[in-house]
Image 1 (cartoon, helix red, strand yellow):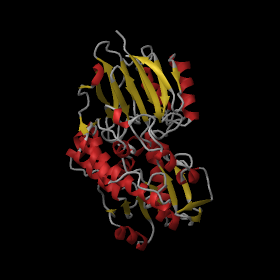
Image 2 (cartoon, rainbow, N blue to C red):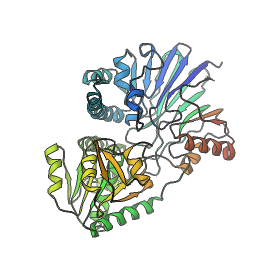
Image 3 (cartoon, rainbow, N blue to C red):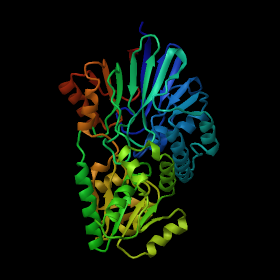
Length: 457
């Protein structure tokens, strides 16, 4: 017997960020993800808006992974009355604690600048963590209203998961992919297949383009380092503190130890990235077999000659005293905050500098403007001329590209009744929708923000 539910796309539809989905019916109101909207001019206003549901009526929240665009409004949800249970993997719970604390600092500085009250405070994070329960992959967990869920490995970042929700009577399933990993990934296991879902809510960040091949991205990184060193310049890498930084450390570690690039000072100038790397070290057993063998063989994959962690502001300032060539990996990944802004303001006006973008840049962000060729950008209220070389290596993305998304969708082609394509720019989402229809004969749609649909489980 089928049970009727309403699925509402409260956030993450028609946009990459702000993931927030509500499944309700048959005695349950369930959220999947509750993220910040990022990159837009009026994001702060959007993030302060009331939720399109009553937080106190939500029974549970499933968290797919610890990126801020999937977790950033959870403390606000609690602050506004949520009293349910939050579920994620253990690694996601640990990462969320440090990510939320870091985000709170940035959000509160923005609020103070605009003479607004804080979006949330440490007490709200603590209250959220008190409601947080960690579950293992494939651990079937009961929810109200006859539903169960389990997490499958998404292969995106440490602890990332797809949420598979099913009804105990019918066995019908809806899967929320969260973000899907760019498998095979350097550190993590491949994305698990989904073969028996009746409905799929699927990401589409790179739904209209392909990444560089793995071997090509490593060659390009090697070239960028060599050219910057030859110019006696500074290589700036805006750091996505979670996953991308750890991959970059691993890649540079291999190149240094194999003698492929000159040994130059490398600075990880991000307290958040340093903390996240510590959590990665605590979860080495979740890495893929290749990495586990390297570690068992004595290789510290996050350490190599020349690498320095600069945690305090005072340590960060000393980087300026070191003559080039040097490599600086600093937060944040889209240059919308963090220490990278100080380094960009100092080094972007120099022709010897290279700015290397290794992750998705949201439209409107400083990183996106630099990627699109801006010759002047505003950083910390100052107009900064851009004479640096700007390079992009897409192969380091932690997201599946078009080919990877299509290959993933082949697993449920012929089974899924409907595929909802979300978490992508409209162009990317609509391109993927058409491909899913034309090549796999799937009934795919790109819902609008706030839209609701009825499904049967």
